[in-house]
Length: 103
Image 1 (cartoon, one colour):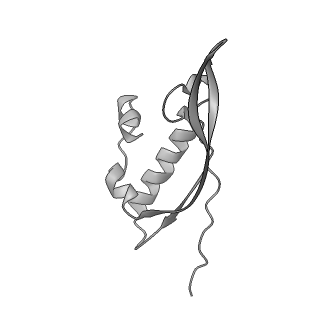
Image 2 (image 1 turned 90 degrees about the vertical axis):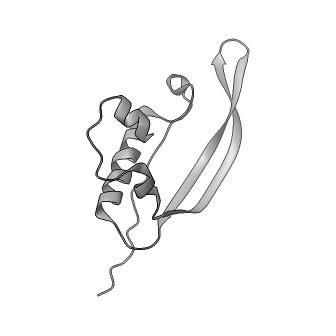
């Protein structure tokens, strides 16, 4: 996704994709396979539909958080993977549930 961002002329990101992903862990997911019609009348491709939940681990890095936010927004606009113009690769980002501050 970051390579595509740069290839399409996106501005410099505050952190590398590796730095942005380092404080993230998969905390939940639900996937199921689906067949998508990619060429009428009979050409289908199997893909996956579902949800992915990420949780921040470790210390919050503002540059990494800005990079993740930018790339997730980009994914919503551009999609991910193959056949995005045919409905595959759609990304919907839900609002972040902020952890309660400890004061």
